[in-house]
Image (cartoon, one colour):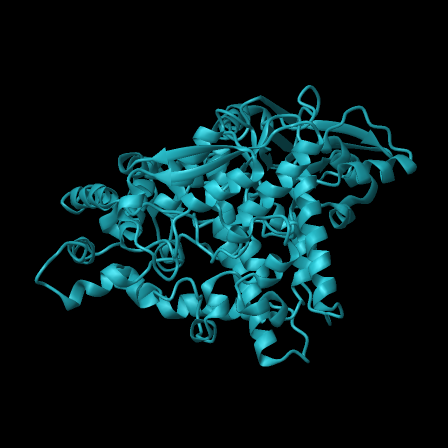
Length: 624
């Protein structure tokens, strides 16, 4: 994995911009601490920082190639999991390879097939290719959106980068937001409207999209989408294919020239990955190490509920004994979590999922001491229907994003000036219905199947992107590459049209997946009810973040006051304390901000992140 950035500017000489390019490169150094390089060929500059995983001695970037009368240069962030197949096909066409790196395979693939190469790639990636003689720049992002790619395009000049901070390191882009940016932070955050970079003028190449910049025009198109079709396989055949696809995806993603480990929560998804990885390592003479996260004194304060019915520890122990693998436990305390909220903003360049982000950042920091690559279980819930909003008919049939039924609550915090500029409900609903209308669904689908396809697309385009942002930024901030096998597009493509009764087999969340992997897990783990990523229940955390927010409330110079009502923040904190003052503020204790995990303590922490972000990035609020 790496960090990439670059610029196209045919109006100014790039010779005088080298310092800016170095600043962009430096801002991405955490993504690629091992090597770096800059390629300049007016009017383009390509910038790279490398985390060495495959063929560390080779694969240096930017990488150059002369082929078919053209000269190509590439910067690439990602991993291809079918490199050998691509190399073999290209060899039959006369291509000669000098390294084992997937970068070289990708560069040759582009030289041979141009943008059509994207249909042949199985991997996670964001890359840019410059065609020297054609004077054409190509940008692309993987189908699922695991690897990020932001850009800023103004008057024919283009900046692009893996992270927003690199774009802001160049003076062409400035840290400004308008009313729409405020709406993204307050009404959508920590999610983002697809393609939106929140900062004014900053956009994102969407998942499964690519772009050509030629003759001053940026032409963006979609090259892949989930397409509905009649599912002809029986349940038994479907389960067999799911097992093959899942195991194959995991095994492909275990290939590395540096140490590999897995996340293990004791839940279904991470346990499947760890089981397959354990067998793979045993066959190849290696040994698996798993990592688990926990919180100081969490067992003392944990109370089972609908969304978190059980503590992870007993299931982690069960899996560890079953695998015979080493498990390393990382324990985080409340002060650490609260302090790391700000590092998490630095990593994401935006306010995020509060301690859900900061805990992962700290967790990855510890893992990096022992490994360079880890495998994690994101995307199984989106593909197999694991979230409560898939299975609860009351939630499922309700309009609006099911993980954020909180628009009015959110709007209650926003200053009147911004509340008048953008109507919260209209802003959110427009995005919700646009997402529904973009879903490809057969006209013959039943009302239930139609809704389930919509749910998959809502989650793919929105909720899952927030989680993938989180996983990429928190891990790469520590120079750790985290792979996500359930994001293999073949799994998503095959399961999209599978009937809901298959996915809900025996009335269990992810019932199809559970049936498909029988024999890979102990029964106790196989049948464990879904439990989300663990969060702290220690009241010390609520106390710590409340104290920090109270200090901000008391200081009128803090930038948070530009967009958030002071009284609303005071009520939010007061509602968490035992009080005779009841009902008016009780809703501020009960309403989740986002998903299952961002309840009152995380909402308080989110405002800490917003304030820090406004200050750290020196964000200027401007008119449109």
